[in-house]
Image (cartoon, rainbow, N blue to C red; front, side, top):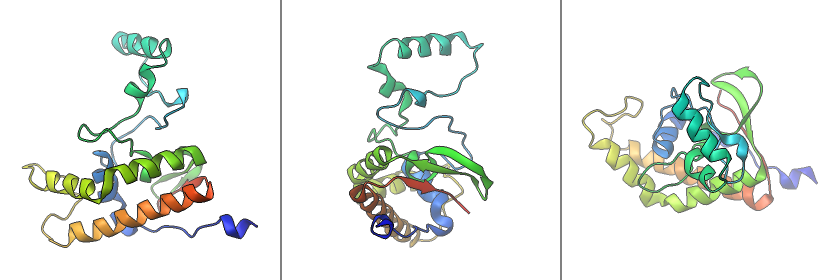
Length: 179
């Protein structure tokens, strides 16, 4: 019975850094102190308590449910999709290994990520790459000198979508870790 609910692991090789950046607009070294979920009050960013403007913002959010998604789901301005959980998201569990602690996404968050990845589409992914490619100050984690870079990143993007959709169809949670 367990075997029919299992799917094999997805390996992104060393391309997870580039993929994470293109999906989120953040590099893997940026500290993201929040989780992304459409339905969780526990996803508020961690902020210093002595900052009065943040306190007022959090007070407003807590007292008005409608504002929660607006302030807690990080998105890129072009498409408003919450893709932070795709590679480096989820709730931390266990000890630090490799590039951080293991993380997990419950089935509902796996579904949300699958939906957001599908909404982005391959064309949207390519558009993100091309938008970064023409910038004067490009991130150094992507090899901009190789014309094939976008091709293999698209292949990984397609594998990621298929992986999340398969997990969603099975109703699975997901364990995320980078070694």
